[in-house]
Image 1: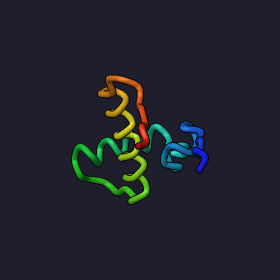
Image 2 (image 1 turned 45 degrees about the vertical axis):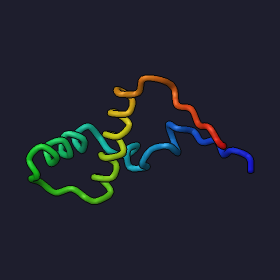
Image 3 (image 1 turned 45 degrees about the horizontal axis):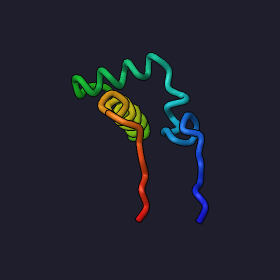
Length: 69
């Protein structure tokens, strides 16, 4: 089976991350800090996706490698 390549800036992230504005990200930050406010499940999933990418990017010590055995 041939590998499937994707565009990480388009297909590798939650689709809502393209649509959220700065005010939305501030609202999500406030919700995560205080637990107060209204957010949707999709917004939380997009926030989680962004947070994972942010932490992985900061903690990664070498380029990713995939080895198939």
